[in-house]
Image (cartoon, rainbow, N blue to C red; front, side, top):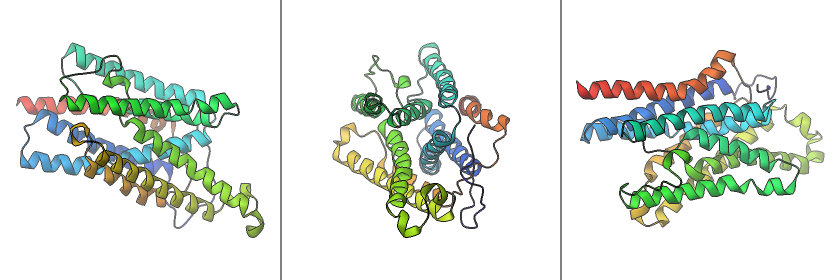
Length: 304
């Protein structure tokens, strides 16, 4: 369970972690509606426009989930339990994808977002470990994401007629190194702000532990988080424009909508908000459940 970051209520920062999670879940759900639209219906102008709208809104979800993961990592009582919860959902999704691929011959060609989150959590765990050799291992998740990106691009080049089965798509992070870089940037925002206030401790006449309970600290962390998110999105955009078009499988215009999430991060209060057990575990169950329900609904509509 995560602890409160601070106890004070702010007038400017009024969005709790609970509200951010709700926004992320809604955006993610609309994103998947867009995915199923193209999967089950012929490509028409209306379908293409709806697809673009739903998927553009859906870009908000990833930065928010990555940000909340960092919040959870910083304030959780047990990294092991946190990792176990992520692993359980990742395995459920993995099994579902394998059944769809080999049982029903209906490929949901995308990675597993819970692999992204689990790798991100392990990356932060290694990075904050006191042992140098463990810190060095934090680069492994990033390299795994880069490899996944390369494989997705390779398969796109062959129009998905060639699939790399020694590392199949359902064992890859859905957003490859992009999600991991977002997670790293949000964690880095805290470290940069802490370093700044430590350097200016005499100027402010207040130590870091006390500063963390102030509105000023929260706003600075939010602003730095937004800045680093922008840097990651811009770098990823440039990367996709450098790569030959035959290998570009990501819509650059869509991905840039991730920056909209910055508006919500700016208003984050640093407070966890409502977090009853049913909601905490329900969020994990919701992901595979809503995918199943959307698939059934779209399938039934398509055969009418």
